[in-house]
Structures are given as structure tokens and as C-alpha cells.
Length: 323
Image (tube, rainbow, N blue to C red; front, side, top):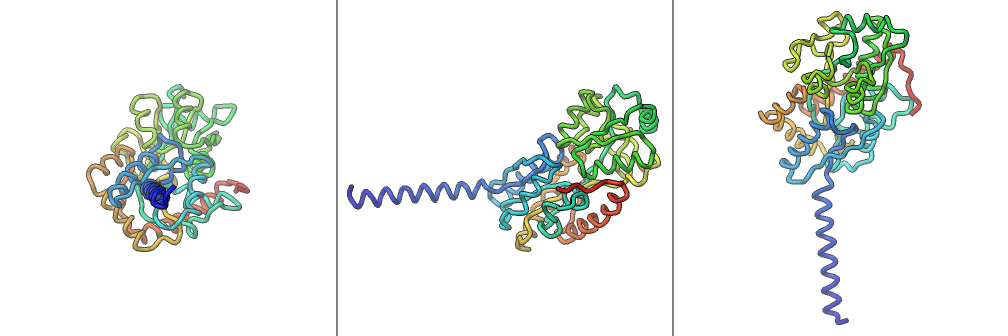
């Protein structure tokens, strides 16, 4: 084989390798979701991936890594490069609640992550299967006390804020309820609709279509007031449970060590997105309330929320898991 032929082959191989590397670089940007598809957090992640692709000129994809109530997905962020190629959209459960529920946390959000942007407040609702003989919250709580065995309420996972909202309701009302954890909103809804689960505490956005079709009945929700999507559903606060008048939130996070100017750029992309009528409409369809926070303000909010949850979880009697 001639020297020219060898050189030509080598140059071809090098060109192919460079093309493969460039293609990988274009497609390796990801937004991790720690919950199964079908919930509002997954839907919001897809909105963000689209806007980040537009705003950076690089392709962002949603990567689902469900399990352990979102912890598996969040743990992936800890070891990711701090170059902005790997992001995480997570609920408050995985950020401000998580470290209070385990003895040896797999990650410490305030140390291992950087808060980039708030991506929406969400409401939590108590829903029942239509076979449950209760038309409102009071009658449901009374009904649970007539049952010989505790009435199960499903959630998106043990140690989530939704789990603790159910525990707070049971404590405050004397209801005969027991927690039934699932691996996300979707699986819990499947059993609730099928009648395998009598009740569930889940995000209102994830339950809206089932409520509107009559497959489930939402009895109360955690907002300060009523929701435009469900004007006939009262808040827990107006029913006498003010401790449940608190919204959950979703946020976008990156690995610790991201350059401040990159964090600011990403925050700008999110803010610009939620200012558009298109994204606000999509957020409202998920029952998400947009909030505009700078990265610094969001970081401060996360810190305050983390401090708030500690006493609540301790008062619930929850025992921290060893892992």
C-alpha cells in the first residue's frame, strides 16, 4: 500500500472520529428527570429541553432515571461535569426534604448542586376513587375512622413532601390513614383510577384529566385559594387545615462548580421562556404557577425551605432510613 493511500485512510478515520465526537457533543446535553413519564415534572422538563435547545444552539434531551422517589436521578447530577451539559429538574422533595429523611444522604443539595431557576409552583390534592363513599373531605375523614384497617393513601414515594402532607392531615384530623408509596405520580394514578388504591395525595396537575373525566374525585388541594382549573375544589386551608396551605415547587439545578456566568445564562433562558404566552399556557395546563427568581434568590429560597422542612418531618414521627 502506498504512503499516499495510508495517509488518505488515516485522514478519513480522523475525520470520521471528529464527526462522531462533534455529533456526541451536540446530543449529550441532558435534563435528568427522576420520575416516570406522565407527570407534570416530566412535561415541564420537555418544555425546558426545547427552550434550552433553542437558546444554546445545542440539542438538549430529557433523560428519565426514575426510582427511589427521584433520588436516583438526583444522584446522577452529583458526579456530572460542571460544564452545563447535565441539568436536573427536581421537586422540592429531592432538594429541601430529602436530606431530612435519610441518615446517610447520597447527596447534599446545598453543597453538591447549584440552584439555577425556579420552574413553577404546584398544588397537591387529596383524591379518591369514585367507589369511596365520600363527596367531600370531611365525609372522607369520617369514613376512614369507620374502617377496621387503615385507609391507604398513595404518593409519589416515601419521604416526599406529598407523603408528609398526608401524614400531617392524618395527625390533624385523626383520620385512619396509612401511607402507600409508589415510584412516581403515574403508577399511583393507575392504581387509583383502577380502584386498587382508595385515595392518593398527588400533584393536582398530574390528576387534572382524570378528575375532569370523572375517573377520580379531588376533595381538597394545598393552594392558598381555589384553582382556576378546579374552582369547585376547596383548599385545605378553607376547610380548617392551614398547615397544608403551602405549594410545592420544581426547580432546575446543575452540578456544584458551574461558572456563575453560565448559571446566569441558563437562568435567563428559563425566565425568557416563562414570559412567553406559549410556555405560560403550557404551565397552566400542568397546573404550574410561574415564578421569576434570579438564581441567587432561588438559592436563598431553597435554603430557607430546607430549614423549614426539618422540624415538620421530625414532628411527623418519620424515622430516617439508613440509605
